[in-house]
Amino acid sequence: MRLLYFDCFSGLAGDMALGALIDLGLDAESLRAALGTLPLPPWTLTVGEVRKMGLRGVDVKVRVRGEVEGPAHDDHHDHDHRDHHAHGYADVVRVLEGGALPATVVERARAAFDAIADAEARVHGCAREEVHFHEVAAVDSVVDIAGTAFGLWKLGVDAVESAPPPLGRGFVRCAHGRMPLPAPATLEILRGLPVAPCTLERELVTPTGAAFVKAWARRVGPFPEMVIEATGWGAGDSDFEDRPNLLRLVLGRTDPAEAACTQIETNLDDLNPELAGYLLERLFEAGALDAWFVPLHMKKSRPGILVGALADQGRRAAVEQVLFAESSAIGMRSFAVTRRKLGRRHAIVETPFGPVPVKVAEGVGAPPNVAPEYEACAALARAAGVPLKSIYQHAVAAWLARSTP
Image (cartoon, rainbow, N blue to C red; front, side, top):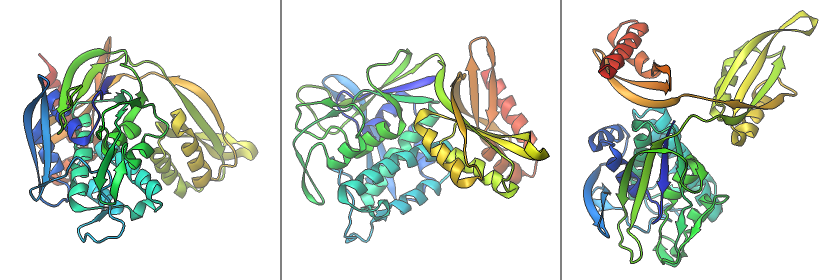
């Protein structure tokens, strides 16, 4: 399993994460090309190198029509809608889903935006749909969040963990006046997670950075046990007296240890078959790791199905709620299970019909399993007028040719 650890000893922000991912090997041009498919106003991404207390780091800046979002962008929403360029939560979702980003990237980015929007709504006593961002902040956030999610996907990151984010004190000026640090939205996002105190009177963790931890980190704590592969450094804008203002991302591999999860099952003999496919879709949307149907022969000689789902403990309640809401179940059973999986990484291979993303699962003593992404292959097959299986064959052959010494 490929693991990325956010060593945020000086804080965490979107531009710092992007810079550190580029330092880890994320190609800036491929990042610009991927984000360029999103329906956004004109923006630019500049990448440079800086030094903080003698340590080299990558500095990233996002400009929207020449304007850079400032460091005090914690409260960049606008409830009175005076800014006619404001973007609402629904607009941001449409942007994320309106490009050509892989589904995994869109899912990760949406999870981070959901964390921000929900926190802003709770802080200001409004609905998520009423949270509005002015244009520069909205574009800056989309580029930071979608770009970081793309970087995780491009580098084949399977899991994210983080050090406890350090929280500075003081005040920051924003759209609504003078706000205390940590910013209210940042604290709301980090609710339930461990944090580290810091005496610096600066904003160290932005809502975007907090959302990365809240939405993506499976654990917040000390360094994990891992085999380190690479380290990337991303620079913040300010200079501190007691520490380099850098984010360190540590990329490594861990053994695919057995993970505890819950298996949920129910037997049904009265489910309308027209609802079955939709039920599976909703189970996956609720966070099920897997879901399935098994045919059964039930009482009174009735044909039926067993509906099963596998879920992490944190998603168990959501999966059970979907089963009750979307099926005819009036009861279900659950039991703890463990699962073990191979390490996975993503790659893109070139075929005569165009590039194809592939997922590669590998383990010690086992040959790799190469799985081309269905949606990309189906689109190429339709465009070229060739059988889908031909695209699959070319993609697997391209990966094997590239991987053979």
